[in-house]
Every structure is written in structure tokens, then in C-alpha cells.
Amino acid sequence: MKVLFVCLGNICRSPMAEAMFYQLLKDNALTEEVEVASKATSSEEEGNRPHPGTQKILATYHLDDRDHRSTPIRRQDFFDYDLIIGMDDMNMRHLRAIAPKETKDKIFAINDLTPGHQGEPIPDPWYTQRFDDTYNSLRRALPHWLDYVKEHK
Ligand code: 4NP
Image 1 (tube, rainbow, N blue to C red):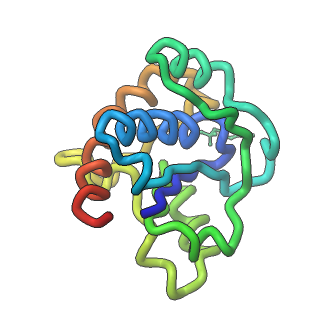
Image 2: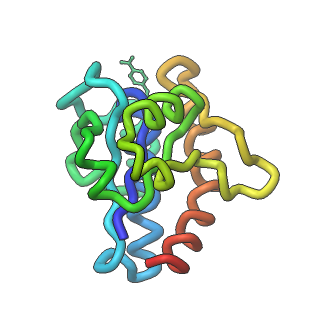
């Protein structure tokens, strides 16, 4: 099973989701069976390291960014990954627009499984600077994706 988190720049939200989900996989001894990565819908930040705000959160919670660099999503990714998870409505529109037709079922929104929060986006901290809000929203959403991969791996 291969999981891909996606946001606009791949420097704020999706690298944070990747690092947090990787920790959940480690805690559950699933890193051999489940891979996680993150990518961007834009090439704006290609090659760049996570935003200092995301790096600060990762340091605070002792999370490993595994030398992440922003990478734009490519057509082949829709075939290579099993779950492709966007952070907000713009990400979802982009993903649905560029996904090859036979891969569209793999695309989900981050809160699709969060009881009481379905349809809620993860606001972009690049604009809000609220990296702690991003962390808290992801912390609520990601355990549901962990349960999902445990059932589907
Ligand atoms: P992210 O935040 O999508 O959470 O990584 C952004 C980072 C960079 C830009 C936009 C959003 N940008 O326009 O460069």
C-alpha cells in the first residue's frame, strides 16, 4: 500500500502530514508494508525544503521529515500510489482535473474519514501562519487513515 499526501506547494501541509503519518506507521510497525510520501499540485516550490513553520512543528513533536524536498505530482503517481489525499478544495479540483480517468477512485480529501468534519479543508498555513492549527487538524484526521490502511493493506 502506498499513500500520497498532496497540497499546493508541498512545503507546509502535505510534508507535515507525511511526517506525522510516517510516525503513526512506525508506532504500528507498518513501515515495511505501507509507504508514505507527499507531493505538490504546483511546481512553485520544487526542490525546496519544508517551510520553517512546518520544520518547527516537526522539531517540536520529534518528527522526521526524511530530507523532504518539494516535488510536483506527475501522471505516473496516480498509477503508483493507492491513496492520494488532498488538503483543500483547490487541491481536490487540481487532482481530479489531472488524474487519468481510471485512477480517480484513489483520490480522497483529508477529512473524508473524520467523523463530524467531512468536507472541512485544512487551511493553508502559508497564508494563515497557523502551523499549530494545521498540526491539530492533521492529528485528528490521520488516525482514521491509519485505520483505513490497516483494513486495506
Ligand atoms: P502548502 O502551502 O500547499 O501547504 O505547501 C503553500 C506553499 C507555497 C505556496 C502556496 C501554498 N506557493 O504559492 O508558493
